Image (cartoon, rainbow, N blue to C red; front, side):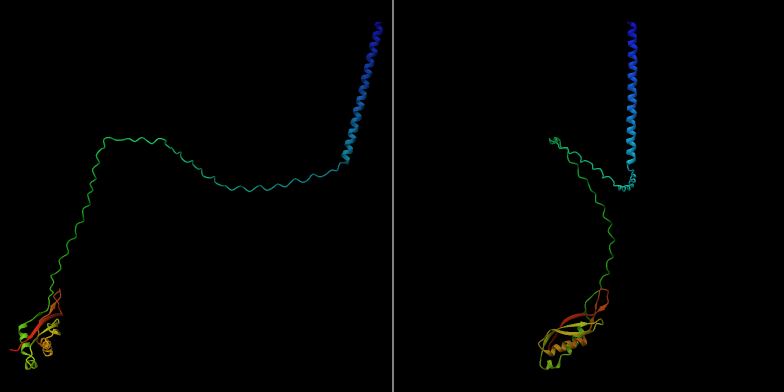
Length: 222
């Protein structure tokens, strides 16, 4: 009985070993067969695939131009905060008001010294025309009474104005007040021009100049 069990155990072990070898052989055959099929398919695929050259690499694009340097905008300071006081500031009243300060005394600058007075002008030597020895030549005019007026007994007074030159002689005569007789008027200018003598007029420096003189000549028959 024991022997039979041992024989049965040996047969079982041998059967197990044989079954294992069979599985190994089948697995190897299966693995090698599958590998051969895969290699064959890979070769066929490689032989039938067209080899294409890879496209050339893209050209490098030029770098973008540098951006111009622009200064950043100046910082803008925020506006200062506005303090809005809700309540008005307290008003302080001063009871004792100090007296006002005395006004500043402004002393005006001293006036510049007055310029020295100008020397007084020399005294003027101007003078008017004056008759020279009038009594003498007035008598000569009376002595030269016009003969026609004597014959016709004509009397009258003639007002004349004469112009006396720097030499004291009469240069012109005009009747300013007629006598009513042309004979006496003409005789008055003729005689005073002939007999009259004068001191000429002077200017401020004492130089003789022309001047005018007026008088009245009376014609009377004695």
